Length: 250
Image (cartoon, rainbow, N blue to C red; front, side, top):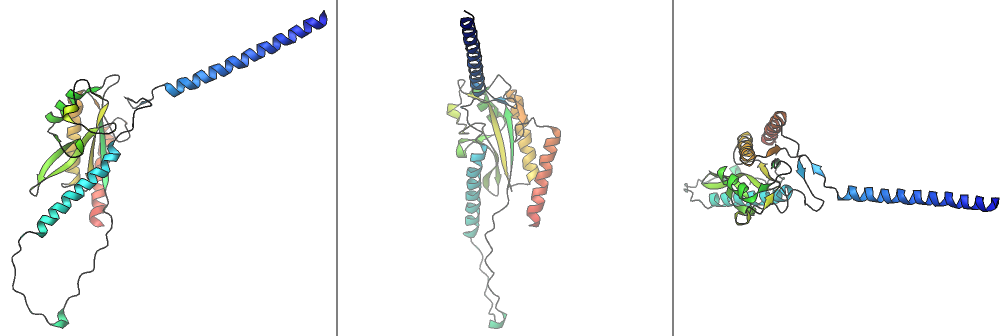
């Protein structure tokens, strides 16, 4: 009888230990699932696991190509402009100048400045409100299916900076921006060297960013999606001036 009691006691202990380990494993799995499915919140912008990353960096290459095409077109027009011929002077073979050596094709240094106008959680921007704000801020729809600040320079319209959707594919097509379309935010970006001085271009973009934030009741973030402070604005301006100084002396 005593032996039977000991056997039953041991079996009971084994069952209790098995149940404990089983429930512990279940709780661990549930915690992992919760961590996996939770929506991370990054600096006031809610991003689902399925949401895609900001599209600004992909648009940079297209912006560079667009700028290069505009420059080539301006240079080509200058080359084909009529030039008044001057009478040629005879030169002795001794005074002949050597042809200039071809310049090495060194890549031009560049700098990007990016700012965001983000919605305030849990709200988002309605497409129709965004379209109205873009137009009220003097921005124009154009290349790459996004909006631009355009200015006529040297008889040619040039883009000083651009505004894109904060998430992929980054496009802002007017016909698609209805009340049913919701946007988490906008990204403004400029490329240096610019068609105008960098500090002037940056101040214009900064003014436009504040205007959009005011019209949409959004908040302004820097490139890292941190809230843009006065110190951060001054640091960007300092970096722009330093970049242009180095580019001038190079």
